[in-house]
Structure formats: structure tokens, C-alpha cells
Amino acid sequence: MELVKQMLSGKTLSLAKLISLVEAGGKEVPQIMKLIYPYIGKAYRIGVTGPPGAGKSTLVDKLTALLRAQGSEVGIIAVDPTSPFTGGAVLGDRIRMQQHYLDEGVFIRSMATRGSLGGLPETAAEVTKLLDASGKDFILVETVGVGQTELDIIKNADTVIVTLAPGFGDAIQTMKAGLFEIADIFAVNKADLPSANNLIADLQAMLLLRSGQNWWNVPVIRIEAVNDVGIEELYQQIEKHRQALIETGRLSQQRQQQLRDEFIEIIERKVTRDLKTLI
Ligand code: GDP
Image (tube, rainbow, N blue to C red; front, side, top):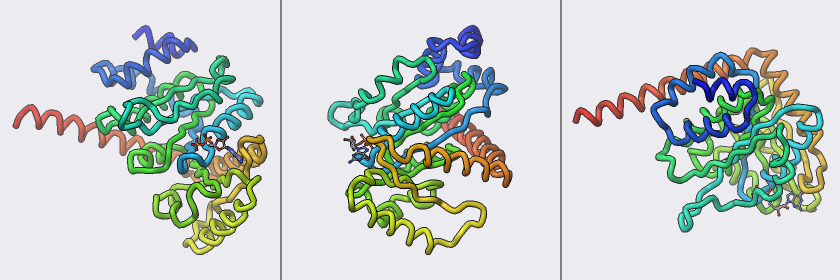
């Protein structure tokens, strides 16, 4: 397929077209996925989640700037909760990302939760693979930590950063939302506000209570995304987590498990579709 060839040779427009095809779920999707399969697995996938208002977009913005400064290419998938009234993406505040829009080394794609017929996690996984095959070094997936769909999307990441901020999700709410289990790193944002200290103390106390894993201690990093403070340390923790995943064999294990899960999902969808045409 010509589009895939062009995408692999670095054509951004072809990448955008392929993503649109995948999002539309057309019959050519299996063929596309097959063609790009040999080229995936190089990108490192970072999930950023947390309650609305915690500072995820600002964090993704600053992290992208850091990654670009070290010469890495970045793909960003921003999953926006969709407004039930307008049908459009509510956040819409991608204005802060504008500096990256002009940068050839950054590819940003927003995806809306609504209207994807429940297949959003699958579509997000496919778009991630396209970005990976296109040669991005890092893929940042930003979702609001609110529901199962978002959790399903984020669990495909290699490192998950849960972003919290004083007044935007306390430690207990975080636990209830299922974010405690998926966090590899906690980023407590808005550390310029005094109440951030309480949130950090609560999180640390809860992490101590948790039955420990011995290969990775979930760190709590204080950041001020808007002031570009703590982003460097956050990135160092991401790299540390990545090393720990590689050294313990977990990175390849995790990725194999994800491929297996995706395979089963594809079969399930196909069987359901076929069954519906029969009965
Ligand atoms: P999101 O909804 O999680 O993506 O959050 P945003 O990135 O849109 O940030 C929400 C608000 O918090 C914005 O008005 C930001 O300017 C503000 N914000 C982000 N980082 C900081 C910070 O470090 N300190 C303070 N005080 N405000 C911040």
C-alpha cells in the first residue's frame, strides 16, 4: 500500500491519512496493521492521566518540550471527553500546544470519547502503532482518569503517570477511580500551592500501606507544570522506570500480553459481528 510506504519514509501527511482511515474503521485497517507490524515496538509509550484540571495538558506540553530539546520525536494522542451537548471535544484548549503544532518532530492527534462505538481503546492502540511505525521515539497518551474506557486506553502505556493537584482529586478519590493500581509515577502538580504538601503526604502514606512490589517503588514527584519546575526529575523517573522494566524482563512481557489481549479482542469483535449476521 502506497500510503504505508510514504508514512514509513517519514511523510507526515500520509501518517495523518492513515490515522483517519484507522479511526474510520474501514475494511483496509487489517491490511494497514499487517504492513506496519514489522516496524512497531521502538517507541516508548507514556500514559498521562488524572482528573480534569490537574494539569495534564500543561505537563504533556512541557514534557514534549524537554523530549524535543534532547532530539526525540514525539507523538501525542489526546483523548478528550466529549460534551454531550455539542458532540465536540470539550477541552479544546490545545492552544497551549501551538508551539508544537509548528514543529515537524511532533505529531498531535485528538480523539473524542464519544461516537467511537465503544471501540476507542482499540482505535487508540492502532493509532499508537501507526505513530510508533512512523518513527516517533516517544508517544504520550493523555486521558482524563474517569472511566473504564480511559483506563483501558492507558493500560497500554509502558509508563503511566498519574497527575494530581490540590483540589483536583485527593488520595482517596484516586484510589476509588482505580488510578492507584495503574500509577507507575505520581506527579503532584501545582506544588506552588501550599496544600500540595498534604496531598503528597497522603499519597506517600497510602503507598506505604500498599502491599509492595519489590522491583519498583512508585515515586511521588512534585511539579509545577506551568512554571516548568520538576519536569526534568519527572523525566528521570520515567527513564528509571523504563530501565527497571527492561532489566526485569517486564517490558517485553507487558507488550506481549497486550498483543495477546488485542488479538483476542479482534477475534471477539469478528465473532460477534458474524453471529449477528446469522441470527
Ligand atoms: P488538565 O485538564 O488536567 O489537562 O489541566 P490543564 O493542563 O488544562 O491545567 C488546568 C489549569 O491549571 C490551567 O489553568 C493551568 O494553567 C493550571 N496549572 C497547570 N500547572 C500549574 C501549576 O504548576 N501551578 C498552578 N498554580 N496552576 C497550574
